[in-house]
Each structure stands twice: as structure tokens, then as C-alpha cells.
Image 1 (cartoon, rainbow, N blue to C red):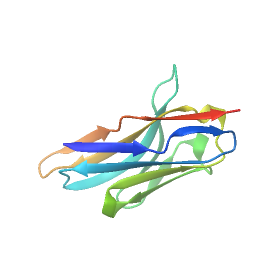
Image 2: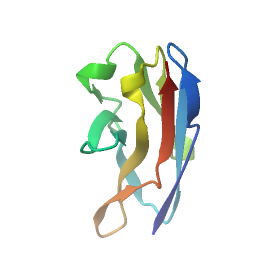
Image 3: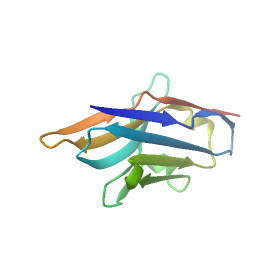
Image 4: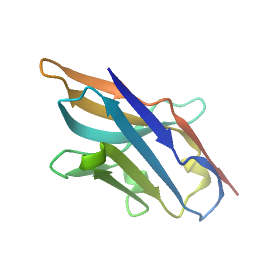
Length: 119
């Protein structure tokens, strides 16, 4: 099993910044892609940003140029630096990790962290 612990959410004013982190622990053979999704009230969960183990990244169009995903492979941790925040960025943010045991591939989710951007 893998545990994902997220931190860094909170309340911020428009134009402000927040940094989310998600640390994975447990019996992990290899971590592949790590990423962040978000879900606003009444909306479906959507991809915000993801990064492969090789360092390739993918961003939602709405956050390009404002958000940056990074990871510390030695600590099995993924970060999301969010700058120039807008009210529409308000959502619960979820960490997602694709990892492998010696036999199988898995996808795990964090518990979610609330980000609220006030105008």
C-alpha cells in the first residue's frame, strides 16, 4: 500500500501564490507519473499538471504560465507551485501517483487539500 500526504492548501487573495506538496510512502518499487488534479463544486475532476519519471510535463491550458509542477524523486514527493492565482482556481486539489510494486501497476489518490482564492 501507498500513502499520500498532501499539504500546502489554504486561503489566498487573488494574485497570490501557494505551494502544494504530496509525499508518497509505503512499499514502492517505482513511481512513474505524478500529478495534480482539482475539483471545484459542481464540476468534474480535471487534470491540472502531471510529470513523468523522465521529467516530461503536461499542464491544463488554464494554468500554463502560472503553475509549475516539480518532483523530488529521492523523497517521492511532487510539488505544485501556483502563482498569480485566480478565483477560478478555487477547488479541492488532489495528488495522483502512478506507481508499481514488483508485480503490478497502481494509481493512488491523496485525500485532497482545499485551495480558496478570494477576490
